[in-house]
Image 1 (cartoon, rainbow over the protein chains, first blue to last red):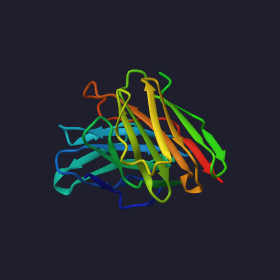
Image 2: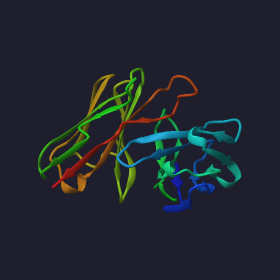
Image 3: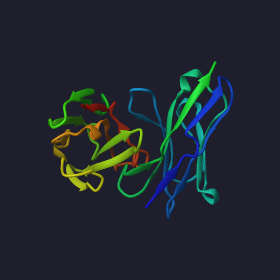
Amino acid sequence: AQSVTQPDIHITVSEGASLELRCNYSYGATPYLFWYVQSPGQGLQLLLKYFSGDTLVQGIKGFEAEFKRSQSSFNLRKPSVHWSDAAEYFCAVGAGPAGKSTFGDGTTLTVKP
Amino acid sequence: DAGVIQSPRHEVTEMGQEVTLRCKPISGHDYLFWYRQTMMRGLELLIYFNNNVPIDDSGMPEDRFSAKMPNASFSTLKIQPSEPRDSAVYFCASSSSRGSSGANVLTFGAGSRLTVL
């Protein structure tokens, strides 16, 4: 069975600073990988996804993520964080039927002014 | 499309009462998922449907929980009787297996926050 680990429960960065959120997955084959963002009181919104091909994927809101098979990682990055990026971020791995994804426990991002 | 629509957004009920949560998926999506989110357990997949047929309900906590999808545009999650430990945010999500760009991508509703007193 697949699993996802997000080692950082909470991260605080200053506005304008760079950001990296870590995600490690466990899956026997090439997985579908996702990052979702959840703002307070809202559902999850897709930031980006990796299915195959180029291992560096671009998403919405200036986010990108890099798939590293050798490290079983799919870390999320943003060069300059904005206050509106404060939210909870979930990494997910999908396998099998469309959307049957397993989620990590999430990383809460706080942005300092 | 208005996205995935869930109702009610908030529900407060007393232990032992029946609770029904509702979901309208995105038109044309052939998969529908029910997730539960709690601080202790994170996001858990409860059940999912394909073309209105339940495929995997192994995540349903116990017999008090049931889900139906009578047609492609409507699903319900019912808890009877409800207990305080059922308090959580319940999310409905849908996806389409058609087209490589959309496959496996979940579109979530805003969630139904359930409080059982």
